[in-house]
Length: 416
Image (spheres, helix red, strand yellow):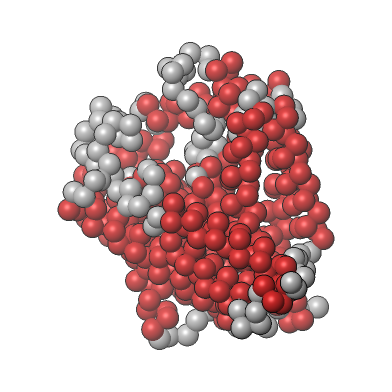
């Protein structure tokens, strides 16, 4: 029996897989388990599509400046499980986490890389993000399982802060990082578009994201948002300066009692959260000094007890260092950090190039949003490693793939 007999021509698996990819992008921040279920279905159908078409690789060509270090980072992360203190657990985590991230990256390049499909994926992400933000606001004001326990609130340092929005994500800080990403892309897309429903919709989603972000009381992400807005207004859309300043002052005037203590604490190390982050930095730098090639993928938690220095209760599992750069260096070593930073640099250069091409406004806007989102990720990454979260990590690689795809689609429109 031939492949054509098993998979009839009437089965348009490309369209089916794209439809599943759309649902996956929508569900990812709303219900992780359902999204993973869709991903597994996509894996099976993609295998069937490979048998049917004989094609595995996407038609999109990834620039060698990106593909080579990306493959090197991929292989390094795989090999690094060998020197983890728990190689089998690290290998299992690598298969699951890297499988989901690399698979999502591949599916976008393979099935969502045409202009129209990429645009629809962006729209789906924005709608999903808007719903997450809206639910977070509803949750905060109407008391639907808003976070109130001491794990996320230092009641002694912030007596007026009684709850924090968490929406559909794991904790307030992860939600806040997601909302910074949402704000970056919504403002980036807003800038080059003309007036109309699309611009109005982006403005609404942006305002929902900002409002919900405030209710997370996540200081590191507030700072990240400030830099995102500053870069956006300074580099891409100068008209935004006055509205951003006016809006910020308005928020402070309305919520000064609750916000002032949280804002001023940014410049202090008196509360437990800030103190612990400095201690985590000390542990991570010591780990890097003694293990310049890293402690292995997912190995931070197994190595941390040797670098606890009495900071944390030994029974508490410390999964990461609460810092993007030190965590990558601690697990994958200095070579891993260098590869990651080089890839991010090349992607930022590609996004900047796309912004100046004679492409459709939304493509140039997505490039602006991508650059702004990188600013948010790296600034927030100074105080937390939110890319450790599966949903945020997957979205990070989805948008990396999208920038590569749009760079390929618009390469003939690049200005020489």
